[in-house]
Length: 249
Image (cartoon, rainbow, N blue to C red):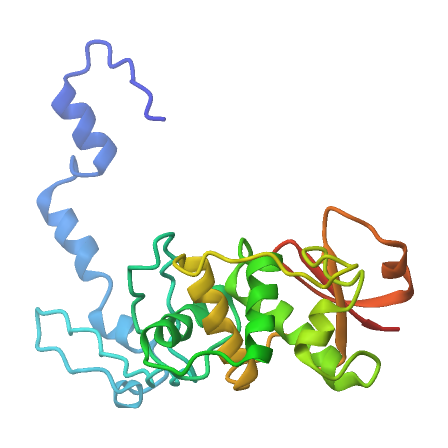
């Protein structure tokens, strides 16, 4: 804070000159400046100027700062996109490509879009069972969560502890809540919806091993708003969206 000084009757100009030291005669001022040789200031620099690799400035000018050259950032293995998944399924993401992505919602989205646009054969019966499970179990989940559900089905079929067929895994009684445990009936899907297109794309990614969301020994999951007793006997691996995934302890 700058305080106002009570000058009284002292003329303002005289006061300013006294404070700043300019009230001394001009000759005294010159003598004071000359008392500090320029050479004394330069002699304090111990490192030669040439060693600093700085541009040489001409007298009376300021040398420009050197431009530092930085190495380019390493390339990424996947083209990521921060574009959110559209509700309508009609807006392509930035960087749409069919490369192996980082397993996040944003990382998977370009590949999912590519899989929905590319001409591809219809899913087989076994693949469609996975897609139907993804649609009913995880269509409100992020894309990496949908992929994780598909991989649990495939992991179970390969484990030797569950039926060997993907449809048999999905229809096994009391395993997936959307399946009628007595008849194995699975409810229908809206095949014109974006959610079904995503479920098909996720299934193609999982079956083709184009991305991995979970290790191969993860065989169980449940929603985070329930706490089944069997979860206490297993080892938690990951939580993706609203689902918690487990392997055997």
